[in-house]
Length: 157
Image (cartoon, rainbow, N blue to C red; front, side):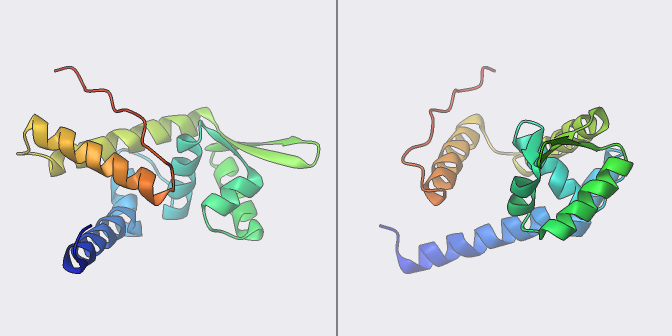
């Protein structure tokens, strides 16, 4: 078991990572750098939809984004007007899907995120990167309460 100071240090480091990565200005700068003209809330919605296979039910999007249904409704309407999402009504349910422009925006945002991570890992050797990836994956699954992380395939050089 880790000592209290190690746990506190890890906690502070994680808060700093989440804070820096999710800061609205940072996300807006990343989006602008890859030609994605969306506000920070829409950027978050694009990420959420992309991470869930390109679509979520309206209620699930609201829940994952920690937004009220009225706020989510306004966001979806704004994003649909921009051609980023297609809200598909089936009976009483609405599924929010990334439109082709939203899929392209998601792909560009992910590529930009990969470049940010690659830049942050500059100077690390392959073993350090592999160990970090393994431990981070293990940690994320433990936070989520998942019994064990899936095995991580090693990348070929």
